[in-house]
Image 1 (cartoon, rainbow, N blue to C red):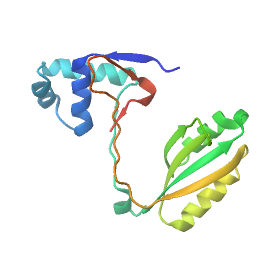
Image 2 (image 1 turned 135 degrees about the vertical axis):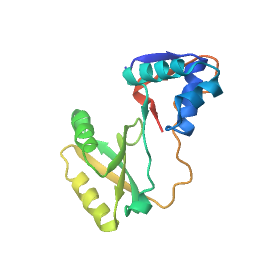
Image 3 (image 1 turned 30 degrees about the horizontal axis):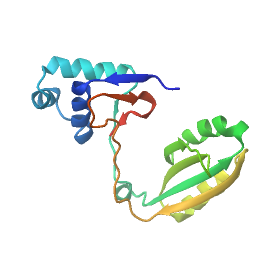
Image 4 (image 1 turned 90 degrees about the horizontal axis):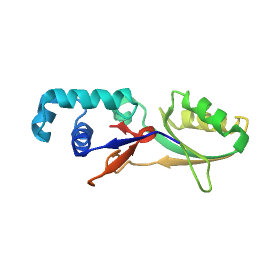
Length: 166
């Protein structure tokens, strides 16, 4: 199980500000939150050092020539699950990878230049040892994409394995 990192109201406010704009200055965040700039800097550094915070840049794949987004829902042999997660995570086309409970075991999102490349990725996935089923789903349009690692409650705990702030 992932280490749980307790957050106070100041941590949550800092994280919310970074989720809106990950490039925002510590000074600006400090003014909004009502703390010193050094407090913001120290809190962000602590959360980064604990692996609970990563500030990332998201790009529009369609504007970069990767106009095909698809989800691949996989059923896999349980003895190969971890090895498959490691292997799939190394593929440059995989932009999202998670373990599931339910009908499927693994879900991945792939970004491709075109349907031909998607077809090759599906075939490559089906050929992996331990993969018993691949259910591809083509994403026509993304209507909302957000990742909120904090919740608006007085006391919360952030699961460090799910704290990638976008």
